[in-house]
Image (cartoon, rainbow, N blue to C red):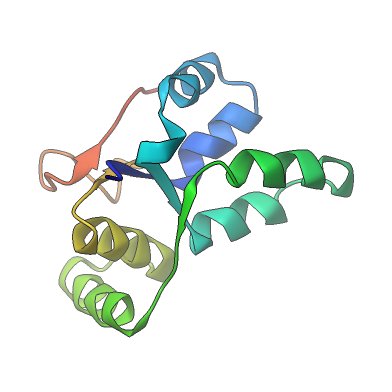
Length: 124
């Protein structure tokens, strides 16, 4: 069973050498961890061509969640309700639909005191 959806900011921190992020990422069981197509795209856009093969292999260890009609509709509802940007509403919709934690450092949009599906593993 997949337990968490890792938000882009966590993996970007790891790839940028932030020790707290690396420690957290290394503690994860890839079989119980997912990323979204949004996260994959955001990560790949931010890397150099020389890093692409290695980063893709890193991302490939996680389950990849796609956006379908059901997720899209839930995302629209969440976006209306919370005013989230589209990528954030998709991340939330994926987490809620699949009954897993959204693991992020983005407490501006995802305050864990307001949203019980959010976990914040570290701060910087």
